[in-house]
Length: 414
Ligand code: PMP
Image (tube, rainbow, N blue to C red):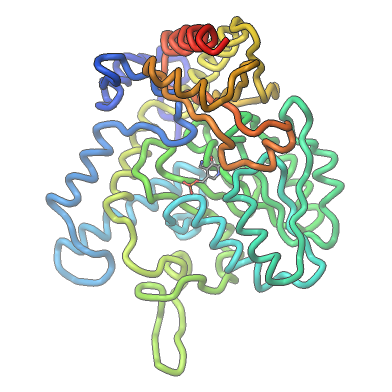
């Protein structure tokens, strides 16, 4: 997975040159400072070209025809599955269902795995730091079965209260769901420890890897979880791509969730039989061009090396955190010792949206709002935060630009 040795110097300028959008300006010539990577990442030219090449040279549907183009399209699509499976440490490509993203992956688990197993009084355990995509699907199926969603608390620092999580893993819990990396706090959760606790109690563990796969080396089997969901557009790939990894024996037991073409073995009007996983869960024409692009994104990330990417982003996190602490009245939410380069903050006397609007006028793109994490906002008693989220192509100079824009905004709002 990490072919490039960790010690090779990180050439940020050369890497940035591969992302066409990073060269653009906004508002009449201000350089774009893109610090909204937790929302979606930018795309290198090789990914954009792979999507373009698919439509120019290879466009055909997958698995349905014997002609050359269809075989090429199928090869690209299955090649993406193989590349992604290797990238996340899956035992085989057959353990990886290709989805439109994390949201589709968690909904698939909710309806195909969980719903048939839930009885009145059962529960799903999640945490208060989850994205809505790792809360709402569980609520929907629990609502149908008189089951309940429980949420493990966090500490003020943004760390999960692991003892409380383990205490809540009672006999009623049919599935535990936790994010690998928080999209708001940056907290990296101790997945192997949580997975071991879940295993001791016979509770399967789903991990939301949306914010981990783009930033850390991930090995799903070493983590010890049962399901791992991720999304392509945050890892330099196209929107509408992602995946669900699950243990082979679990996937084999899961009934189909969507019905349609390509997921069947045989269809009669009286009833149908279904294909083996992962095809069983991939009804209809998939985002073939998107997966051609995502395969390129995987090669691109592997070419840099995930160990080096993680190390570089830690440098950026340390630098940006220290610089942000110089801004009077600024408070950072999420100070876990083990965190990714996501910095949520509030500035005394300024609403997060006003602040983000003023930063934007300086060319600095951050996100403001609840970040699809209402329960987390409630936990901290705030309606919204500003969030600067870094990728390996960001620079210390961009962190400086953020701080300069914040100081200017603060003076305007005072
Ligand atoms: N989980 C987390 C932690 C996320 O950050 C996001 C995206 N913001 C999602 C789930 C949902 O991803 P998608 O919209 O690509 O399905």
